[in-house]
Length: 212
Image 1: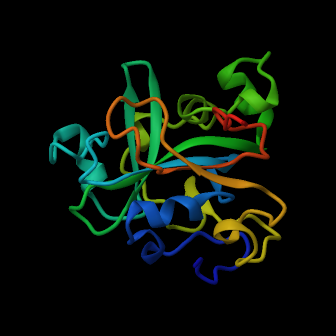
Image 2: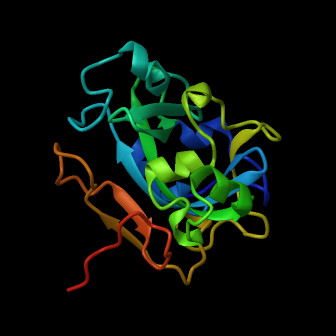
């Protein structure tokens, strides 16, 4: 269950010091701030150390050092040499577990996000994918290893203002929102693990859920 965190505050490190599959759904609805820009997280994926799809599966490497670091920090990597992707490090130091932030809803600095992405980008497309989210929030190699647990830091994860913890999925999503758990996307290994969570009622997710 979510911790009793005051509205607008960042989360304590102990919040992240749990398995990624436990932390992941509770990140939905939190605001990811970078400077004056912010996006509300609407889609996430968990990656554990025994997961063949995880960067940590083959052990510690120079580029994955942050993923094995203290919980509550950011692990940033470049996907296919093109897009930056941001992950929240979970569990104890040395474990190699993280949650990929797959998509967000623009909440602050939307005009700045549009300039970074494309002035013609529709609001729903600004952060609708892990690469888009990082581009809109100007997250790249320099932010690898950043600590997300400090109030007032340029880069931080915070409880949305005006939301009382304990309502809706994870505590930060309105009870009226529909949260669904599915298998992960965009990977070729361990594709059967249901470690993706998304707010299906949000138009900002990277990919919705097929309806029968």
